[in-house]
Amino acid sequence: MDLKMKDIPSVSYILEKIDFKIEIHENYLKKIINETIDFYRSKIRNNEIELTKNQMVDIIVSDVYKKASSSLVNIINGTGIVLHTGLGRAPFNAERLKNLSSRLEGYINLEYNILSGLRGDRQIHIRNHLSSLCNTESSLMVNNNAAAVFLVLNTISSGGNVICSRGQLVEIGGSFRIPDIIEKSGACLKEVGTTNRTHLNDYENAIDQNTKLLIWVHTSNYIIKGFTKEVSLKKLVILGEKYDIPVMADIGSGDLIDMKKLGFKDELQVKKIVSMGPKITTFSGDKLLGGPQCGLIVGCKNIIKKCQTNPLYRIMRSDKISIALLDETLRSFRRNSFTEENLSLKMLTTKRTILKRRATTILKNLEQEIVRDFGISIVESFVEAGSGSLPEKNIESIALRFNPIIIEANHLSKTLKKSFIPIIGYINKNKFYIDLKSVLPSQIKKIRQAIIEVYSCIK
Ligand SMILES: *Cc1c(COP(=O)(O)O)cnc(C)c1O
Image (cartoon, rainbow, N blue to C red):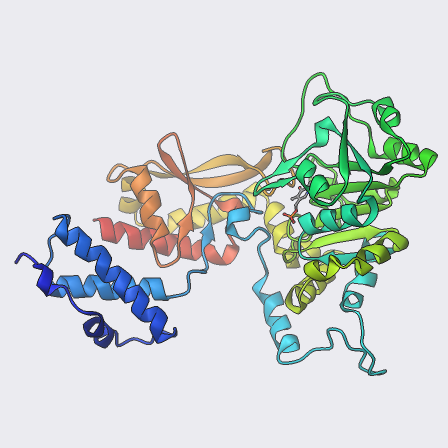
């Protein structure tokens, strides 16, 4: 029964065994097979597994299949965080993607004026639409908001000073830090005020002939509470006008609608920010906006023109697929339509009563035995929007709570990740949760199927 080293199959033997179609280059496939064989060879050498020769071959073939398949797969987001950075941020509406695929097939007039035959500008597909939604003179789309902030800083403040409150020296996950970005842009950061309190005269005292920009950053992923003071954007703009220094607002996660009307506390509507008068406002296209990864710069025409002629723009310009996706996203902002077509907003605004109904549907269609053994119940929860868009965790939601009696919660969580569609939930106090805020309605049935699948494997 015991496997000997000489029984370990060869690469060519495994290659022959792979009768299914794997669409990758043979060299890569061989590399994967080699690595997999090596992995099991060392396991056997260390006496870590006992297998028959046939079992060994089966395991290797199945591992190779997994490793050779696309690693980017569809999943169920059960974290409750609608704008989850790890899970692709803004969820996308498949219907909208389908519309796009026929328009994008082959060639498109990305930078070509069809009638005149002259070279065009890719920004025109977005510019007027975005500018009018934001009520600005002009706009510019780049690869992400980090790039947007960097491009503006480099364009208007390189070689000079940028003044920023110490309360707004934000770090977003993944190494985006306002002080570092300012430094790398070629400008010099002049910090003013303190962590909790900054006054208008702190800014005013710091202004000198080298001051090129006043920056106001939305503290998108934290809240400073208690003895605090922040200078409003409006007041900062008035100060900027007094000294003829432009003000830029980086709001991180701008929205094109009034989130307050939808019951949210925070105010990130781009139009309202713009009405306070900053020369430039920057925000992400894939946070509350619900579009593809991109950064949007809106505001004064002159500055935007300078940004677009900056050689760095070429490094940051968006590709045709993102441009088309943003176009589709902007089109979703019609009266009565955005909450249907814009998946991010749709999920964020789905009411608890509806989520509860979905949870009930899942439970109703499961056998009692499964509900009991997995200890499944429906509980009320609170979630955050994610991606530092609305920092407080105060959005009402519903979750399925698993307090299993036949398996550890941890193990259940791991097993659900391996089901036919990986489900990513979270563990809290030894219980496993799938929050329905971030689950698409079309995935509700799949959750039930995955639970049944996992149950039958464990039993
Ligand atoms: C998220 C965020 C950024 C970075 O935006 P990306 O689109 O992730 O590049 C910059 N500034 C603020 C305030 C943010 O919230």
